[in-house]
Length: 268
Image (cartoon, rainbow, N blue to C red; front, top):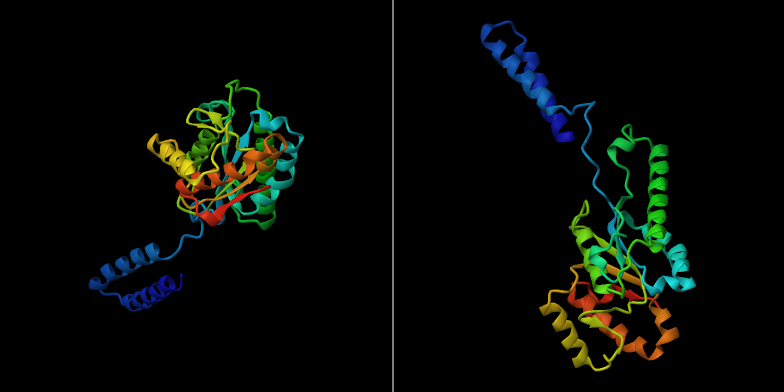
């Protein structure tokens, strides 16, 4: 703004000099007025849509057998609101038997204030609108957890992760910070990632599985994202022997999907 005002001041001085009533200087006066109108900011004009300042976020909700656990809804109630403190936008993906084509997917929710929602930049209105957006994001998450419109059998965890990767690619700031929260026990049992046997204690077996997923183009695109998973510990109630090898396998999968090793938090 300061360089603009400096240039405008110089033009005003030139304009004052140009007010001497000579025919040759009339053209100078007109030029100076035109340039001044271009340089000075428009008081009634908006500055364009505000750019999100926080992360683009995604919520992946397992609506297969996982949601039958009483803890599933508790995880959402206890963890989601705190997760959203670092978000300016939230996309959704459901884990079902056919995750990418699920009719349960919900439209994303912007958590930052849009220009038309607060045209006069009122602080009270901004707080009210943000609170309303947050409430809407939480409501949509709970509605997704309870969705009954998808009867596809099985648990396609990778499909849910691919779906949220696509959502983040289409977010308002796809090159910005990315954060993902997953509510699932991560027990995929569809296609190339059927973890029913959980025979991944050996590192070579894990590496071979990751390579297979890569060759079949089944890995999600989650470059640079931070991922936190709630619900993996519920697996220990049914298959405690599966917890250590599958935790290592999922870390390898996320690493191959572009998530930094220190950015995966599998809660137990």
